Length: 114
Length: 115
Image 1 (cartoon, rainbow over the protein chains, first blue to last red):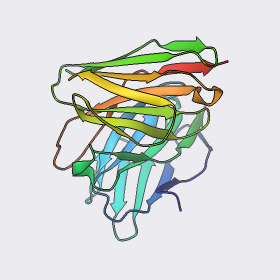
Image 2 (image 1 turned 60 degrees about the vertical axis):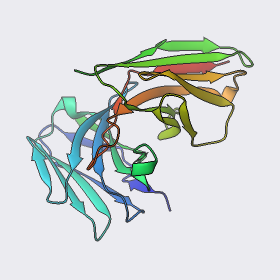
Image 3 (image 1 turned 180 degrees about the vertical axis):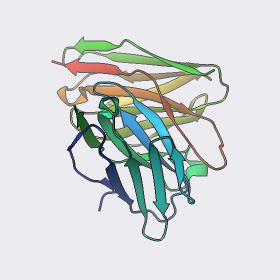
């Protein structure tokens, strides 16, 4: 089983659609969770951290279910500029003595069409 | 504010040639530093991380090495490149000893093609 698994994608949606990305992780000891965005041939950029209580940033909502080891990202009213690959990221085991390792999912590509 | 630099942006090297990629961070002290590789169509693979000057941890056996000669400088090297070393090399930093989270921030990357 992969440490972090995401929907394989790609997702092709029209502008204005609501898109949901799903992610599961295998290490129940993981402490921190993030969504990153990576544009084509660019570096990943932090989109948002994911908190146990869930958090929202404008059109983006992230949820965490520790019992199910499941993370989600919801994008509402999608824009053309949302087209990118979305990476689910969790901290690796023993973060405090291993330099804060992050484990990246393979990513899910999103293409928003006019 | 913090800034992370990488160079060169692109590089084409013959098989068997040496490699040196450099990464520097500005605006922060004592960062954790990381080297990742992303092969075409693949996810990010952590290669090395460093929690301080001269302290390097290797994640995967390979013909690459890393060094941290200064607090905010991280260098990725190879004595002899292989075709399989082609990829997108990313340097990242994070705040050391963050208590609750370890967000990492990436440099612009170096796209390496080995021919």
